[in-house]
Length: 222
Image (cartoon, rainbow, N blue to C red; front, top):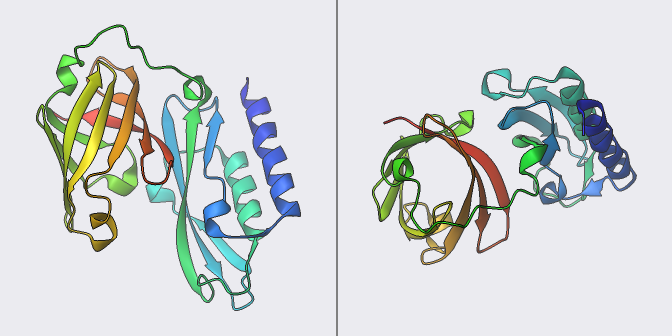
């Protein structure tokens, strides 16, 4: 699929969405598979909702966005401006952020190699960070059995359980946030889709508690 067909796929989805535009924020599609990114890139927008539950202003947060296709970004902006939320939405009279993720289409149906039981040696331990600018201040420290994710205001601790050389589970162990404490004991399944020479890798993560799927890149620092 070339970039033109990827844009057409996005455009078709947006046209359909326009016909059913009275939606909840959770119904906005935020993951797109395209061919104009090498791995995974993101675009961050701020949108403002008026008293009539209509989006009246949309702005790209450029310093947080790694996706650069201006045509697609304009389509997303137009899409957001077309939306009208449920009349009783709590989003009214305020501005909010939303992230769109663009994933190279080769990862959409990629299966995880499972012909070895030993994890990638360089991934077992060390310091890592997310490519996603939203988490740029989060430091990931990993041992063979524990993963800590530390930022200025948060310090999350997970047990890490390696399933195969390209799969592991992160099990919620210690969460300072009240929002996350209810997930302690539950897990996130992580598939490693591609590993690069510098130790960075593309991942697909599935949350056990809501089946949300997240794609991203983790970069090895040391």
